[in-house]
Length: 232
Image (cartoon, rainbow, N blue to C red; front, side, top):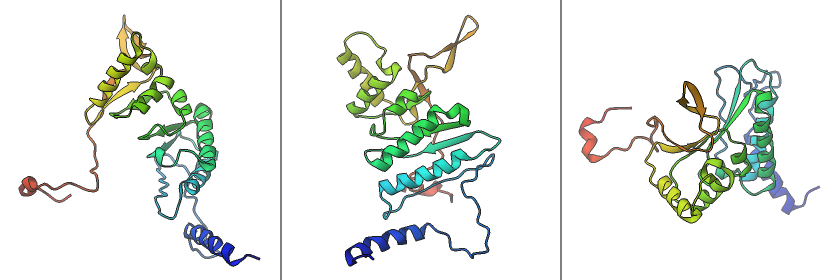
């Protein structure tokens, strides 16, 4: 039996759980939404005001486990966008982070690659230690710089006055334009010397990506462009 004070939160939890359940008949054959197939893309979007970060991490963790356990004939990619929104302090977040780290460490055995996009250094620095490739876009935070210099060889393998070098490196990052980034990847083969490919090692390479294909919140329409606008 539950008291009145307990019944309210219980009903709320059950209602949230029910919202994730698809209403089907008892005889219907349900499809596996997380079933991996060559060329298939599965998006798990938990953007909902009723879902807190702990609940989101639990659901992400379940989806990750189901996806990784499958045996398919092609490689798998796990991508996390805006990871700083849910990979931070908390028991559920810590458990999800540990399972992600395990997937990264075992990626060759599982034929899986993990891609993480974040805007803040609140995610576990262990990801930086395990990353084979890091793209750093422009930022203004000295905290991010300290995190990079503590865990990325290319950001720390400098000599001289550390304070001046750190300031100069931060100025270079702040000065990056849209679409530009710094690439850290010790195994990247970007040069050729005496006919042999040379690894990037502890060096840093400025990188240029293609122009974006999407627009924030739709296309911006300026008054000066009205005459030449066409439907999208």
